[in-house]
Length: 372
Image (tube, rainbow, N blue to C red; front, side, top):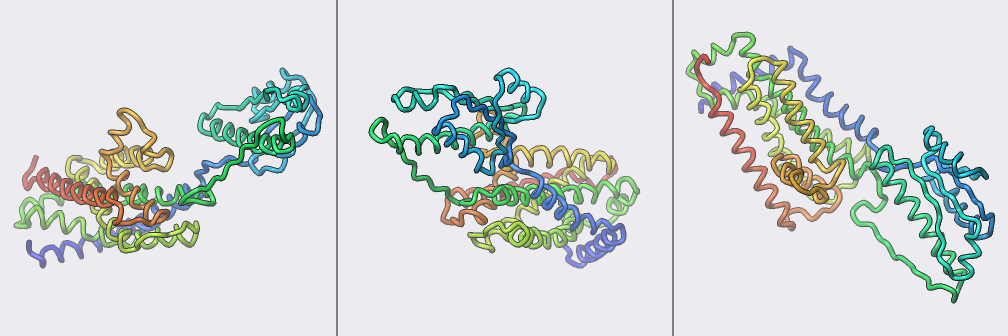
């Protein structure tokens, strides 16, 4: 490889990127995606519109009602109305949760008998419905624990000593932002790299490469190095946004974060380059890159669903895409801090290195120095 030739091509590509104002997309797009999705995606449900019908009006029923009233997860309204009319509130999307306390609620508790509470949850959006249902169960169990303590010998007391690990505050930002970094670092570099070679085909300047003594490896290196250097700065910018803007904790090794991010950047650029080689127009290249990166990125990044909870074909598909391996390392360095002491992390770094080598080799093989 002739370094002089590569240097000349690199300077030419940098000049063209700056002149075409693509450099604005290099830094604006990753920041916009991180800020918009970081603030926009919320797994937590607060202020769920909750309609409570207390048919018992007793001390213990009011204790249960007060638990809902003093929780940030519920916007509780206590009314006296029929069950059919109350359910109609959910049908009209005026209420999210309906809780019905039966008339004999306290009486059955005092006699040591089992009692039931009616709970209706709007599950039009299953994930949100499941979250609200778990909140209701938590409040009811908390109230039941206090009631059992007051009942004394009539019923046993159950206490739960619960601790949360890695994300003690249960903040959505701590769970979402690291995953978004992996998504952004996959999409933005790939889209820019997808334009590098195909634009030469559209303009006809690819014939300069066909007729020149420049080798395929020199051509690919010259195309990728400028974009690699520009996007390497994004590794630090996204880190600053995550830790200072979103206040995500960082418990691992910054060196591990930086080196794996650079490796992942090579993979992203290789994907874009490969698409740029096999396509003939810039529009097709961009659309294909979006399909290959955004859809798998969201599905298998761990932002919306943990990979460990996937079953069947989806779990095997997740292991095909590099975002799963990189995001595991991101969540480790931000929230866990185990680093290279984890054999899984070491294995994933090796897989990413193998992925980068394979993509670069495949791109070099498919690039031809001839008219097709």
